Length: 244
Image (cartoon, rainbow, N blue to C red):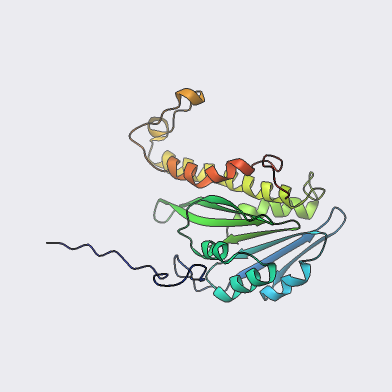
C-alpha cells in the first residue's frame, strides 16, 4: 500500500516569530533600492547594506525602501528591529506561501499580495508574493525577485508626474498596489490567447448579483481574485479609517 508522508515544515518546533525563509531557494544577494522625496526634493540610490536606510527613519520626507529578496534573515531582522516591526509580521514576509491578507498593527499596515507573471519557457503562470508595509512616513516593499511592476511608479516619482510627490506615503502605497493590478491582466490574457480558450473559458461578468463562472476553468482567474482581494479595502488612500 502506498504511503503518503507530509513534508515537515522548516518551522516545525520553532517558536512563533522565528525568522525562517520558506520558498524557492535563492542564491542572489538581496537588493536594496531606496527613494526619498518631498514635493521639491528627490533622492534615489541603491544601498549596500540595510543599515544605510536607518538615517531616513526620522525624516519628514516620504521614504520608499524596495527589498528584492526575502531569504536573508539578517537583513529582514535588522530592519524589523530598528523600525520596531512585529516579529509575526516579519515571519509572514519571509514565508512566501503566506495567504493574501491585510494586517493592521496600529502604527503601520501590512498587505500581502500575489503577483502573477507568465513563464514563456514553461508556458505557465508564475505566482510570487509581494508584501507592502505602510507607515507614517515610509513604505517598505518586499519582493521575491526583481519585478518591473513598480517601474512606472519610480518613473512618476523621478519626473514628478501627477500628484504623487505632493501627497504622502498612503498615496504611494495606493500607486504601488494599482501597479500590481495593472500588471496582472496581461499575464492572464496571454495563456488564454495561446490556448485559444479566451472566449470559451473566461469569466462571464454580468451585474454583481448574477455573476457566474464557467465551470470548465478554475484557473487562473480565481488565483488572481484571491491574490488581490485583500487590496480592495485599501485601493484608495481614504477608503479605510486609520491614523495612517
